[in-house]
Amino acid sequence: MTSSPPVASISDFYNLHRGVPSDTLSELEKKYGEIYGLLPMAFTASRISSQTYVVNTHMLASEILRNQDRFPKAVAGPLSFVRNYLTRNALLTADHQEHNDWTIAHKILSPWFAPKRIPKWAFNGVDDITQQLALKWQRFGSSYLIDPSEEFSRLVLDVVGLSLLNWRFNSFYDSQPVPFAVMTNEFVKEAVKSSMAIRADWAIRHADMDESNLGQTWTDRPPIDSGIVAEAYESNSKLILEYLLKTGKPVS
Image (cartoon, rainbow, N blue to C red; front, side, top):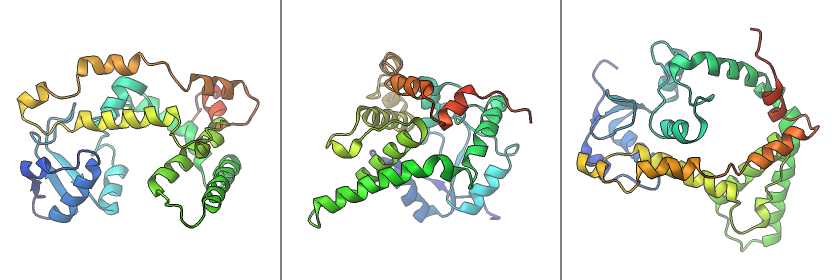
């Protein structure tokens, strides 16, 4: 690309999808192409003050991911929110200058996600939960209206719980989402909303989300997964969680 990327105008953001911001980015891609800029005044994310660009092709994304010195990782927007109120310095939320920490974590995790290793710890959980979903659809009959987003979200939650923690959320047996899923969904929505400061300065100062109360809202909540993790840690199952918690720092 020899010319400068186009820049999305502020008017584009007044029509964005508040519930699903990614839909807005998809529409902008159709309008502006494989790469476009966002005005800093239109897209304000903490810790980012310069021009922001959005890439929409695998080739461009791969080039960025391969060259971390030229394109250092930025912890901003929803990811910054997750760091501030949930994870702190973690694998996905560490700043570029904190690379020593998450490089170690990456070395610990990588062997578990090798193609030959995944079936050994994940297949039984995937097979078990997938059978539950298939049986549910079969028993409800051909007149049952399937909500793919809802059903596959439950599938992912149950598979992760069983494969990583040896814990059954049993979300297919309740019409209501499990509390863990509800809280996770609420947190993700707040993270996205916090980063979409597409308003005038006065509107940002009077936003519908009170930042001073927000930290208290999330940090004061009891860790609902603490019992799950504790039980998994005490079990004798060969879980990926046990390996992550008990393994030492990789030598190389």
